[in-house]
Length: 417
Length: 150
Ligand SMILES: Cc1ncc(COP(=O)(O)O)c(C=O)c1O
Image (cartoon, rainbow over all chains, first blue to last red):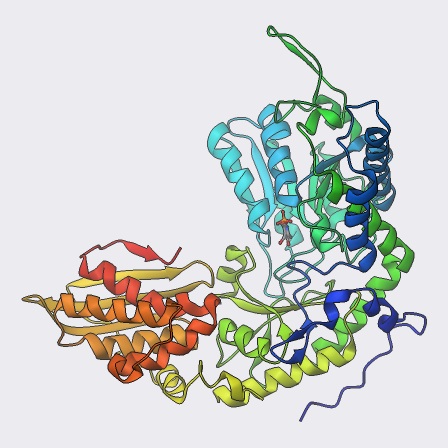
């Protein structure tokens, strides 16, 4: 009953079966069916090497970091700092001092709003975002604006879910103190023209922050080439554990940023009269950090780099093209987000079936998709839908899984009739 | 393909989803409450006409999944003619069937609500079934505000 679309072989050298073997969870049965995991934009699964990195570290290397002369502390510190270098290389930052470890994208954006934002954005100033932001790139700015009297400006999107660039440009004013945009949208898949945005903002001396939560597992990111001032991402969407992420900040900005949380590690000397703060990036990492997951993030980056982000991107793009072509042939299925430049996300609604029912029904076929507003309620409002269903792809997904998804969708349309 | 889902998506649910009963705005209502499930974006408006402690009429509007639409549709049918206290008791029954760990012994006694018993296997969907009833509860307490399942 499926429409006849030939799978495109993404790359002869790309061995998806070999990749799948490295992810133990993919062997799980869900409600008696083989798991088809298509909720990767929410979070993706972990390869054995990452799982092992956690238990190996606890078994052999664990100790606190930056605060001991004993062997284990030195070993733990080295591995922790090696992970910082791996992040630096992965996004091609100039120096590892520009990498701050945090819980994830959300914490990174909040840090920027509360430190850089409070120091540089005052009454009547403006922060410019887009209409396709995740709540985590809206709410921290709203909080800052409320405190400081600054104004949040929102650049509109068109019906394909693309930023309307002219209007974005028109919203830049003398009062714009920061532009913060999503690199790739989680609700629509849209990849923003970030280089163009950065060049435009920089011509007016406005710094630019990129929310890289979705882009990082799908696109090669080079912060020096982009010339962005801030870049935030989460490890858990990049095959690393949850609870660890990183914020890149250009050195000259990071050095001037006031500290955020106070405590151990972020200071050099403390007396009751005053404390002298530590150098970057430690000034922004108060307290004992998430040591083990940071080390495992380093392992995940090695794993991704070995396969090659370009090869992964090519495979995922082929999956997306295949899925899109099939989806367009299904009557009553409407894609939300049809940007020209789009990553591995297929957001959709069905005429007669609510996304929540789609989610439950597909779960019964072993298929995990997300149903909801994807933490992007303004995007839902724009498309006048309460929610969408979303299939999102990762390095380990296959064309066969897309066939299973589309068969499931056709079947449930029939059942709901 | 979806055979084992029949517990959740019973024919009655499909029927109420396709043709929701009392799906209309009520001109002469004296209670009107908005219900919202922020988790899925479902919204409903419940209209009641309460006179002398009796629910004379109940209707709803809004957009939701099959479970919440069917639950709202059923609810408006069930509570019409009931006292406010009786309606509250029905909510308690629903609460019991959707969340209790124990086997529901006598489905017969539950009356029409029994068709919603399937959601207990789907914890993420319980709120879909209870949203209309939370909204009703607020209307009974005469809260004009909006309620949310969170
Ligand atoms: C575009 C985008 N930004 C930010 C976030 C927030 O990331 P986290 O929850 O890991 O902090 C997400 C995650 O869903 C996202 O997709």
